[in-house]
Length: 288
Image (cartoon, rainbow, N blue to C red):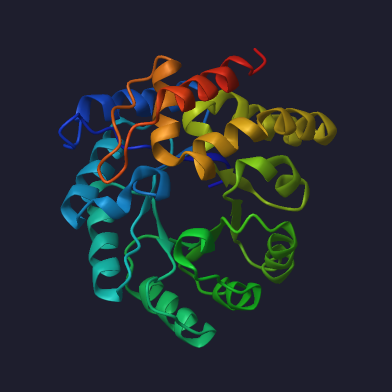
């Protein structure tokens, strides 16, 4: 996989139940916007608010609808649940599994490396490492990433640290392997591509898939200065629909753009009227 991926939002109805028809519509929306692959059950998907079978159902629907590859989020804090979730994702039609670092408890580098090796050994589909320390408080070191890259079934990584120095070290330490390195922050997408990333898995692509895709296409055409300029114009919007207002902010922005994104699941709350106005202004500020 390479190019622009999207950690797809999961539409819920007002009672907090999965809205399957809206989910199918969101898949169509991001594909029409030009994304290269779809990641159901990632952080933006509210995966941690769903159980094993519910997540498997989301992956199944996305795999049925998608015309692009599907990388399913399958990580849990424990190994047993992660292996079961990965098996269910494979059964549902996923092409790969995005496995977040085990969280809640503290683990050293040796434990993290052993964990990922066991997941990769047992997984029926290729796995992708996922480091998102802002949520998990666990960060994969570039050295562990470099060693894991030699495993036949570790296909790549999503780095959501937002640290370009770390990403560059990961690229250097995986350069001799077939290893897809994705950045997880839309605010530094163009810079990450210029630093050797193969693409991105971007929450921004739920709201503006065509703009995220355009950044990648500009990079592919050797127009990195233009890619950075476009990226700079999207930084405030990206921040609003990710770190600042989270999933409720992203869904509000998508609804404003006419996408049936549904509602966020509790304990999330819908954005306030003033926040909605801020998000609308940022969406309207996107250049056509």
